Image (cartoon, rainbow, N blue to C red; front, side, top):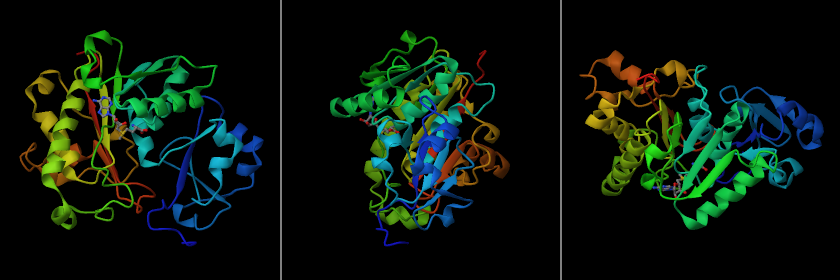
Length: 330
Ligand code: SAM
């Protein structure tokens, strides 16, 4: 593919930052975009000079990785944000249900801020606010810069980036939060160049997996999502990782659904029809078998609350997301 390196993304994805502009205005204004020829499939992005509009995520486009987007005026002004396609799913899932009007949301683990600024693009239309937490003191600076670039002076109160450990935040202090996304640290096994990047099934990866490390990560992921589920008015929570391992993905979800506190709070997995239903690759059904007495239909329904992405094959990084919901009136 045009001399592309192995660790290079097959597609450079960017989203039009609707806090600052809209696709029509942007594409008219900048020659960089108006010169590109539309193509109808990812597979057609084999050279520079073309652009693909993603059918799954609004305002998301794919171009050739060699296209000079990062030196374009639109990128430097924050009118477009480079973000992998899969990484756009959590915010899109949080706002996928037409009945959801989350005007106050939390990004629990925010830096560098791709998902935070994506959330902000939805919340902007509702005149709401995004609270973004990041515990790492170096990464929080990157987060703040990214938020400033994405919002500009006009909407500088749209995002509140905070240097803090999310698990130390009191849920009672945020009584109006209805939606959260949690994208915690993970093994990163879905990112190119990592040891198991091309593995696409459990069987292939088992030998390479450092189970102890994965289980440790899973323990941390469980704890942080459990905290997100404790916010009093929350009725939708999206959990995601850039891992391909079920240990950090479906198994964390299953452990959360088994937890008595979480059951008492009324949390369930969402129905597929509010989790970008057209996306074909869903969670691994077999991982839910202990929860649904091996009832295949039920397993399928649970796996439908999750989306998966195979590295490269699905146009970018390997990724996982799951959506929890509960009755807003409960
Ligand atoms: N969501 C980000 C994005 O799309 O740009 C990427 C998040 S990255 C996978 C995970 C981040 O969570 C790291 O920056 C890490 O420092 C932060 N983190 C880990 N544990 C945390 C905690 N307990 N509270 C807040 N941030 C945390």
